[in-house]
Each structure stands twice: as C-alpha cells, then as structure tokens.
Image (cartoon, rainbow, N blue to C red; front, side, top):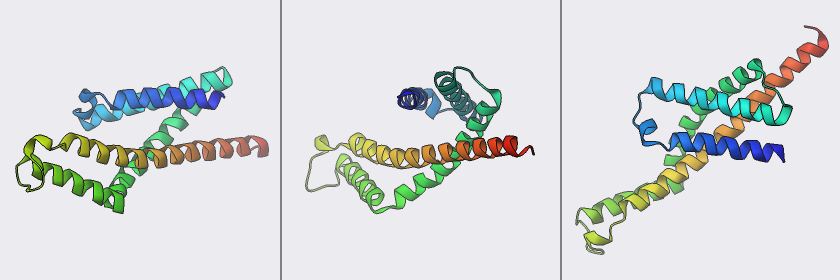
Length: 156
C-alpha cells in the first residue's frame, strides 16, 4: 500500500512540475535543476513513507537513477514517434494542420482539431517513454541498493 502512495505522490509531483509552461520554455540548465530537485523530492518522500527516515546516499542514488532514466526516456520518445502508432498519429496531426489551412476537400477549416491530434500524439509518446524510464529508474536504484547490501554482508 505504501508503494502505491509513493507512486501516486511521485506521479503528482513530477507530472505537475513538467506540465508547467515555464518548465517547457526553460533552458536546459533550468530543466535539469527542476528535474534533479523533483527526483530528490520524490526520493525523500518515498523514503520517509517507507522507512520513516531519509538517507542522503539513497537520495543521491535515486537522483542518479532518475537522470539515467531520463536519458532512456528521451531515446524512447524517438522510438515511439517512429513506431507504427506514432507515425499514424503524426499523420493525423498533419491532416488536421492541412484542414486548418484550408487544404482539404473533406472538411472545413472550422472542423480542424490540430490541438486535439497533437495532444493525442504527445500523450502517446510521453506514456511510452515515461513507463520505460520509470522501470529503468527503479531497476537502477534496486541494483545499486543490492550491490551496497552485498558489500555490507561480505565486508568489502
């Protein structure tokens, strides 16, 4: 039950920050700072809920895993765009843009829904990338935690 609460809190925190218009228009350095702060906050909150205390070492591991996962997520965004569904959704966006420009014999300009088609594409790509990045982040954190535990038990 606590993992569900942590996941819900993490999703709300990271989703809320990334949806801000200021974030979307920020520089790379500002985005990195916000992402690191978000990862650290989510990690600290999760540790507080699960363990009742916050470890700086665990937080740093989680932040590192989060940055690794972000890199994986970016690569997967490109993959999602090049997938069959991604290409269909991109074509739908282009069709809506053509309708909006009046370059369609099928529908009038007033019926164009460019923002709706764009939102579907963005949601699809974000969902694919986010799911994989979350899994990668969890795997990286778990691997480092297990390696640390092994060192403690073997005395290395």
